[in-house]
Length: 120
Image (tube, rainbow, N blue to C red; front, side):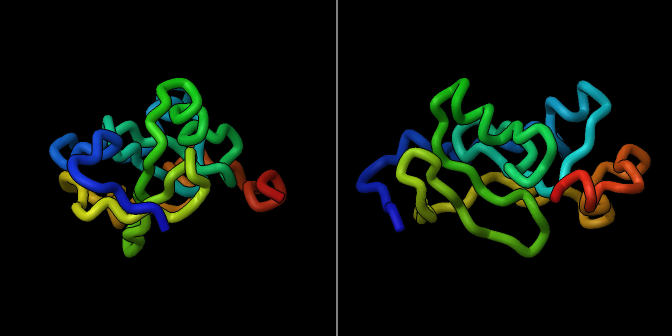
């Protein structure tokens, strides 16, 4: 597990998340399986099990390597650059997860009825 020494410029504990769902999926009326939050800028993107994989695309576009799960009850961080779990030494600004009443997959009303087949 990677751990930074001194100030970690890959993590900004002051920045709130960009919203309750994947920013790009929301803009395109898409849907997601699970959500991830950029630890540097707060961008919320969908996970690699989601159809569009926007969290990884955000890392590739920005170079921001550390994400945190944005799922209720999960508190892990991942470092894309090191390809391993990451321990930042601090947590992020709230909220730490999407709203508990938001379904998984989500958002409500946009998930196709055959979503499990699509994600295989």
